[in-house]
Structure formats: C-alpha cells, structure tokens
Image (cartoon, rainbow, N blue to C red):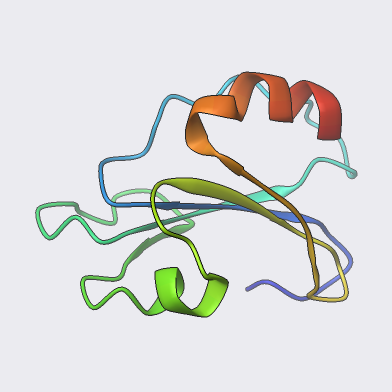
Length: 93
C-alpha cells in the first residue's frame, strides 16, 4: 500500500478523517491513506484503515493526529500535525 511509484500522504488520527483540501488529479499527486484508532469509524472509502490497537501510531512515532508524507522508496519525507493540512498541502503538493 505504501511502496510504489507514488508518494503517500498518511493521516494518522484518533478521530474521524479531517476535511482534506482538494488535491490535483495528476500522476504526481500522493495517494492518501487514512489510519484511525477511532473504534466507531468504518472503512467506507478506499484507503481507510481502522487501527484500534494503535500500531500505526507506534510505527510512525506519532503522538497525536499527524500527517506523514511517505516517499516512493518508503522513507518518511515530512510529518506535520493534521491542523497544518492546508499549508502542508500547498507546500508539498
């Protein structure tokens, strides 16, 4: 899911998915994967992962709701709080 010829924007949250701004529909646009520990969440859209045990939070060292941009080689390019989403999108996309 995370490796490939694409960038991946991973949103790791304890709450429902935040509103995401529009992203350009180009081959360079990152794939978005939302990981939540919210037990009431449902995976109704592609790219939603329910992680009630918090494996993603531990694996990526997140302490709250964060965005993690993953390069095509699987390494972390940057990380930001989800509150920074609009500016992070402008700066990265």
